[in-house]
Amino acid sequence: MMEALIVIEGIVIGLLVVLVAGLLRSHAEILRQLHALGGGEHQTETFVPPPRRSGLGPTPLANLSGPTPDGGIASVALTGSRGYSLLAFLSTTCTSCQPFWQGLSDDLNFSGARPIVVTKDPGEESPGEIARMASGKVTTLMSSDAWDAFKVPATPYFALVDNANATVVGEGSAANWGRVGEMVSRAISDHAHPLHSSTSARKADVDEELKEAGIEPGDQRLYQPPVS
Amino acid sequence: MSVLSAEGITVSLPPGWEGAIGHESTLEDGSVRNVIAHFATFPLPTRRGDFGGGAVDLMGPADAFIALFDYGRQSAGAALFAAIGAPASIDAGHFDRSVLQKPMPLQSAVQRFFTAGGRAMCLYVVVGSHIDRAEVLPAINSFLASLTIQ
Image (cartoon, rainbow over all chains, first blue to last red; front, side, top):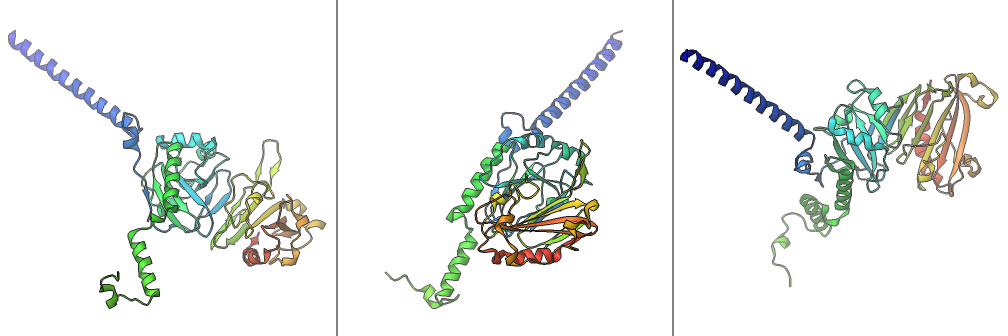
């Protein structure tokens, strides 16, 4: 009789262990999902990668071309033009992209930069959903080539292009349009600042000035103490 | 150069130009939305009138705006569209301030009606500065030389 009770108790304990393990796993999954959605006390820090600005290099595309939600086709110049283009790489299935789609009808202001929503090609996206979610206020293009060219790592993702200088001056992610606006404002401000030049660019400027003065690399005058 | 092609219209965009070719569609009231294409040397706003309203307001002195309006096959060959083929080039002397659909200071425009590819078409070209139009004219003519309509 005692042995039977011990066996039953063992079975019950085993079931409880399985139950607790299942609950812990479920809890961990919920936390993971909340984390991915940007919830929690550190949502901004965990969800928003820091923007990388300055020295991001030349624009990988001269023109951004693709179908539009209304069935047309469009091409936007990213070089040889003027102003800034803010490329917003969005997906219709990405949960974190929903606030951006919903905010397209608002009066968005990005320090004069023109926002352009870029989705993947019709073969990889839902043209119907894009037509439903797009706004007549913001240009929307479907171009997987642009995603490849800008090496979009995840959605939502944003790239700020200086059209006149054909340069990507900022890129990164954010949780909402307001945060994107702050990033754009800061990137444009930094880009316009005289100290934004990279060390290599400043060295190149110095080399050029020295060359114009007739001082080539190895010139002995470079190794003389400064004249007081 | 970037080639833009849709709705039987194909064109090579000079560097820095952008464009949009609309899709012919039937609206809920049964009316047909004609094919309209816009091209410009400057960033085109998302919302534009058929002949550039909302866009020409943003033009600088060195800018050009081009609209192509398809009046449909039923009007092809009519007196207004008797000219055959899209103009291959435009002269500076063709620009006229009175042609502007929306009168804007400094600007002037050219409007041409023709039949191409069995379609009745209108070409409307605006320059940001009538006085300095010769500067942007080579790019406009490069654009026109590449334009095909089928």
